[in-house]
Picture (cartoon, rainbow, N blue to C red):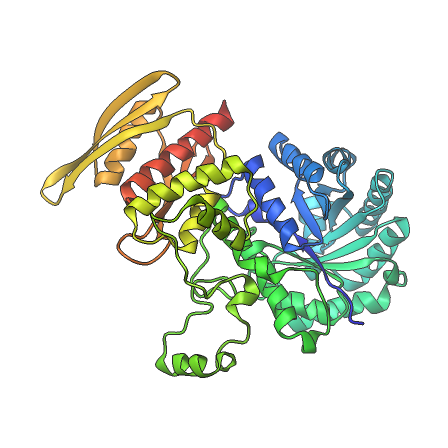
Amino acid sequence: MSKIIKIFDTTLRDGEQTPGVNLNIQEKLEIARQLEKLGVDVIEAGFAIASPGDFEAVQAVATELKNVTVASLCRAVEKDIDRAWEAVKNAVSPRIHTFIATSDIHMQHKLKMSEDAVLERAVAMVKYAKRYCSDIEFSAEDAGRSRPEFLYKIFEAVIAAGATCINIPDTVGYTAPKEFGGLIKGVMENVKNIENTDVSVHCHNDLGMAVANTLAAIENGATQVECTINGLGERAGNAALEEIVMALTTRKNYYNVQHNIDTTQISRTSKLVTSLTGVQVQPNKAVVGANAFAHESGIHQHGVLSEKSTYEIMTPESVGLSQNKMVLGKLSGRHAFEDKLKDMGYTLEQDAINKAFEKFKELADKKKVVLDDDIHVLVEERVSQIPEIYQLKSFQTNSGNKVIATAMVELTKEDQTVTEAATGDGPIDAAFNAIERAVGIEIKLADYNLRAVTGGKDALGEVSVKIAKEDKTFMGRGVSTDIIEASVKAYLNAINRMLSEIA
């Protein structure tokens, strides 16, 4: 029987370190629930000591999920380990993940420690963590640039001290596949007690080789891979979970390994993470990009119509996409809507269904047909649960190529109504200026992104914005068939998030 590769998802930790991404607890829980449904083996829910918010999020994920190991990252420092354990101790399967750098450049310039001191610290902290729980992962940060002989020595020592998983990260995405595969092979052959532990890898994508390096590691004995949805992460990101899993699935005769992922949940998971982080997936992205199963060339179209396998090495259905174009409209009832939600994989409480149905009916009045992607956006809009300190009552804009753009907004806060007007460089800028005047806060717009959820002139528009205040960024999103309304909703959503977090 072929071995099973464990999938360690770090979207909620390394993925959230993507510049501009700032998830709240409800959003992290929603992603964690979907990751559990996807079938990942381990969820790294955060870096517990990093902030009170990170601690609360790790604790919430650890307490709620029942079918997955929940880990918290921590430095090889006692106070970090204490905090990590407090966060994950209620998990059905808790893991403490501790790390220390092992490359010469990190030890000399960052840690200012010798190899012997790093080895001593690593062993001591693994033993310290082992007092809390049985599942301890040890990572040698920047292993890709570390001296192999030192890695063998430190891995052997931490395994003897109780580490149940050793992680070999290519922290800065420096290595090439043959080189990284050789490093893993060297560890497998030179660490005497390696059979007593899982061998994990964590590859970054700085040179675009994270997935290739991860697959090379599997070929050379790795039993766990660390990755993120859509390849999110520091700098150029991490190895993308969906690419690794579909490579193992599509080329199973080559890799001869198994995994526990339900691949039909991949598309939905990708869309959820995109929606909540505001980081869009490029159209030509492997597996989950909009063009991944699109065929424009006449030759390709003819081939696919004759036999799908001519140009499709995996099916849209295998990653959770449907070729069924059945759509809902304004005459569709609640029963049909609920059936559609079930078909799309949603399990919602009745209150959430009712709210989603109300939004669906509002949208159906504006669009002739409502597509699956529209419904995804409507349902996922409920997740953020940002306190609505300010609510939009109405807005009005006036613009043209011969007039100065103006906007009026009417906002409510508790029982009071605030009305303000402003001018701007176009109707959206004018509306944003009016909102700023209404809330009495000067705000910098750091990023604005508009995308059409579906095709057609009546497409639902999804706007995501990032605003900056005192070196912190806050994301907001809004959807509507009217892009100005979607923009106003997104801007107000970001302001409400900012006010709720700095209150």
